[in-house]
Image (cartoon, rainbow, N blue to C red; front, side, top):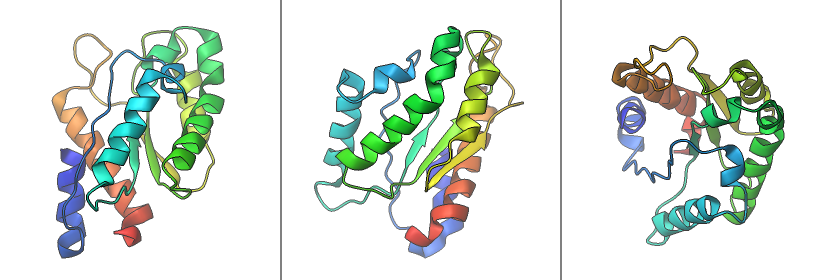
Amino acid sequence: MAFANGVREAGGSRTGVVGLVPCAVGGTKITQWARGTRLYGQLVSRARESVKDGGTIRGVLWYQGESDTVRKEDAEAYKANMKTLITNLRSDLNLPALPVIQVALASGEGKFIETVRSAQLAINLPNVKCVDAKGSPLEPDHLHLTTVSQEHVGLNLAHAFLASFGHML
């Protein structure tokens, strides 16, 4: 909601309705979001459903990767897997320039946090931006962001969206 409110407040009258299509599933690896998986199918289905009555998909917000920090192999494969996910989503939604704003991890379940973060920060595809959550206060579990941190990241996502893609509103 912080993202939607941030876009509406900063975008003014040109913004119109901001709809969100939640597809998040906690504790998942990026490979569980690959084309052909149940989660990927649900993501594409929900996205298509959201525009069937005239809506427009303006972007994807992506905050995922903590589970990919456990195994070195998963962390090292993250960049390629994320690039493939973006390419497949753009193809399957017929939106070749679809903006994607991902969040670079603030934490992780394993010891390969920096490997995944580096991969997230290094993705160099058109219309892909990254918001860094490093240093955001965490809950006592040392994994999940506090509510205040979630709101802060949401506003940072809104600012990144408006700065890079606001002309698309």
